[in-house]
Length: 235
Figure 1 (tube, rainbow, N blue to C red):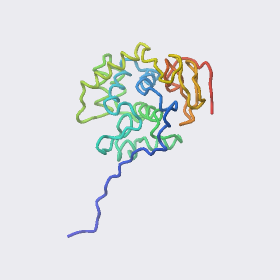
Figure 2 (cartoon, rainbow, N blue to C red):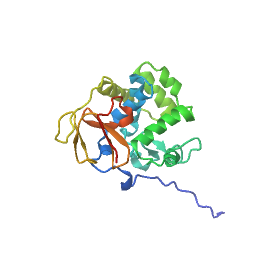
Figure 3 (spheres, rainbow, N blue to C red):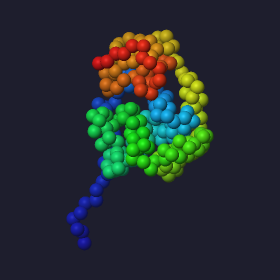
Figure 4 (cartoon, one colour):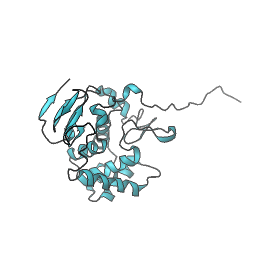
């Protein structure tokens, strides 16, 4: 006999156009892989450990903060947190509540990196001790994969390959210096200022109010770069 109850259907949330940084903005031009790598190094992790984390994120989302799981699944953001869990409802902490408490967009790269670190250091149980103990790429990848991502089909070999790419590209301070904006190799184009700016110029982006720094011809999160700003341009 029917009871009149209707089964709940999960509604999967995708980013609205207004959530995304405008094309050509500092936020849109940020090299997410390097930003994430520098972020974890700045938190005291080794380059190997940081590369292991970013290698996982490359497999999960290509390190895109606006990534939505293929096929309409629940995964969201750089770590593919699940709708109905760590993305928006988990009582121990979720991206939505974390962002709302700080008045920032849940789809922003800096928000999601900060939430990863929040889960590792404040929520706990997501493998920080194992990550800090890792001395090889394989063990760093596995620690984050098994304790933080807790994936089903993990494709660990791909994660290790990605981690090696990250370590090779950014572990020695390398990376592409092609800005694609017609300026000198170590300049960046700022859509906020409407012009090219010099290496280590810091700009508060009109796209998301976050601070970015020109580093080797690319925009990176201001607070993940240890170099001092040569000039600062607030909104």
